Image 1 (spheres, rainbow, N blue to C red):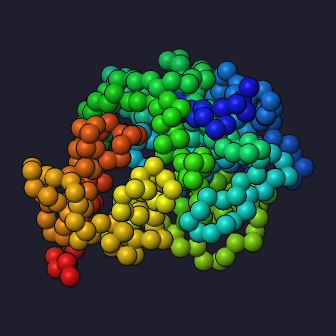
Image 2 (image 1 turned 90 degrees about the vertical axis):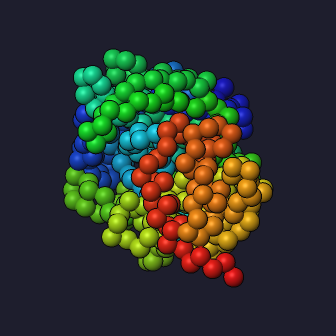
Amino acid sequence: MFKTYTYTVFLILTLLFVSSCSRDDEYIGIEPERISPVVFNIDSLPYNNLSEYNFFKDNISDLDPVYGVVPYDLNSTLFSDYAKKKRFVWMPKDSTAKYINDYTPFDFPVGTILIKNFYYDNILPDMNTKIIETRLMIKLEDDWTFANYEWNNAQTDASFITDSRFLAFDWELNGEAKSVNYKIPGFPECFTCHNKYDTPLPIGPKPQNINRDYMYVDGTKNQMAKWVEQGYLDENYPSYINSLVEWDDESQPLDLRVRSYFDINCAHCHSDQSYCDYASMRFEFNKTEDLSNLGVCIESDFYINSVISHIVKPGVLERSALYFRISSNEDQYKMPLIGRTLNHDEGIELIEEWINSLDPNCN
């Protein structure tokens, strides 16, 4: 049954996370003779409940991974209405991913499962933590497919879903009460973003975004080195990886922060043979040293207040279509098209600073 979804069905999953979600130190170190207890039968997928995979120990809302389920993080992360995320990867025994280049997802083996949990802290009025959804990407023989799970109110399990859902709630962020009508996307929306040459692909796990240190129970280690140690990555990759930076790290150069932000938030659509490849922008990190790929000084056919704009007009926010669209919540204007219902205030401030820093002479 699951294989029939491979080309047309793409799911997202919902996890409502408890406070212990932040515990990354529970991951068990490498034990070569040990078998992961994850349950994986390719002919029986997707399971009805997240618990059937056996990714997590005991109370699964703790997200305490079993052996072989390895936590990871990204250098720069996608904005999703301020949801926090906790990521894991699992691969079948004796299977290994391979490096292609810095900016392309690893060549993952059949059976790989990428596990992405979305949660909020400080849900009002009780200030508790809830997992909203869990999204799986599963590598089958021919392609990647998706399976989405929505967490129940009791936080005891998550159920397989195929349609989009909305969940409205209030939470506290940096001491301020915020409201969101959080959307769990349906199948087609998954494919909209995870689409390259009409083929579903992961977005985050690329060398340029995985090449970073992570604090494991046995100490801090580079994630790629850890994957090699686990047997999850072939060690034949270059010693230097041209890597993204954390977009909110103010110690990093402004241009690198902006290019990193655009790569993770925009490049999966604004690239060749992707959803928005008709547009002139190319937002991949390896292409944005050329500012014209970000639309700088490029005239647009987009009108702002009945006046033609540039994609990015240096120093002039009100004539920059890119700034207008990332600042809008109206469906006909906003960018990204899906994946957010709120403005990302901090991201908007970053782009504002960058546009105002650009040389105003478009020669």
